[in-house]
Length: 254
Image (tube, rainbow, N blue to C red; front, side):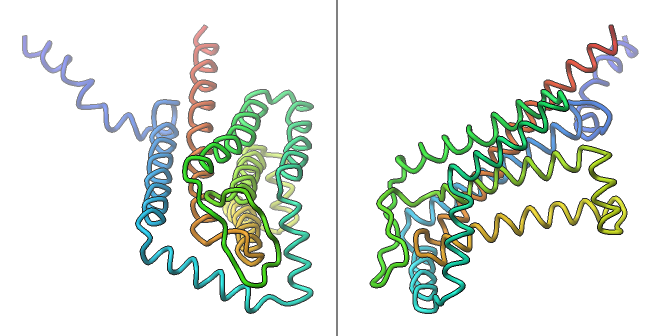
């Protein structure tokens, strides 16, 4: 009887440790993905709540929009215009198509599924949420750009977030590409990871900055888009690669 009780309780005693094991899909990868999705979603909800409350966040939005508009100057404005247009819907989808071609050529079908689900899917989600929140864009006395669509969350920013998140994850998952980047940077594995992730974050931050600088988005619009993009990327990546690891484990066992 005692042995049966110990055997029956052991799965429960081992549940939490199993969630942090690196060697199988339902372990650490799934746990980290779920936590990342939940945290990013909660932070996005906080930003959205701050906008709805019309408090300190909204006042900061208005002050920053006015400050950037007063301090805009050439040729920085032209550079920002060029960079922001590169990360519009057409630009992001064109760059995504090039990455998709590379993945398909290598027959990495799980990465093809990842890219298809993350980038177009996340951009459609963002478009739908714009019509849920229906936030108006900044109104400035001397605007650089005038757009009449809704403002929150920023479409350009989420497009860049999704594209560069997938690109960074893909580069770091390919040993040959990682070694090539590391050799070019003269860096080890950790240095290569830091460089790739840092470059992705910088490109996203520049996209967000261009939207605020040009006066077509508030700070909270781009912050919300980055958090929404991070949540969607974490959710899709966790789902796709958990399923992939499951089928790969089944194939090995057979």
